[in-house]
Length: 114
Length: 114
Image 1: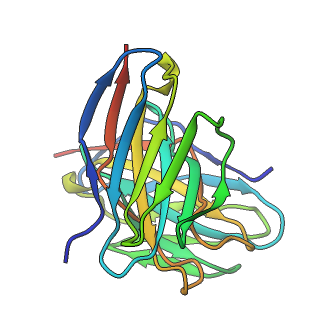
Image 2 (image 1 turned 45 degrees about the horizontal axis):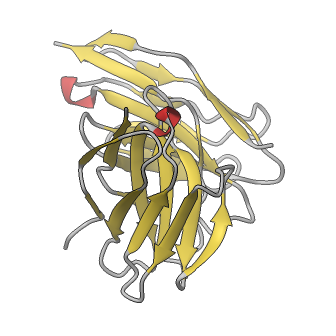
């Protein structure tokens, strides 16, 4: 079945450091890929998405490129801020999905220190 | 514009009891999905409701049931509670007519089963 694997956390960085959170997936066909962020005490918010191979999603300085050849969707940011501290989830939606069923990775906690 | 609202925010129940969680979707959304998020894990899809019918279901037992009302709000019911049902329950809404319409999540209901 479809699945998503993320690098384990927690990840601790200093402010202005470069961030990479790895995400790989297993799926048949052509899934859509997403990154969601969960701030403490809140629900998940969509950070970015990509719906086909080689698409790059971007938002708030974060980027991720849909790499079908390596089945990956790694999240990157050039310079993190303390306010980026949160849990990040990679997710996929298979090609036949109406959009409600997402398969999530286990999440990666990011802590950014001043 | 109100986002997705869930009630209650916290709930404590005893094993064997039954619980009902409630969700109001974001204005203009007609599809509601429910997720279970165990501590330190990614959300797992329970089911999705559209036009007052269960349209998709994840790998959850029949103890988990739901309902959608004509105003698109939804309830999640869990019978015969087990300790393992302790989790954050997230509701997400979307607009069905848009393929891969982004999910908007509520802040969740924290259920503790003792």
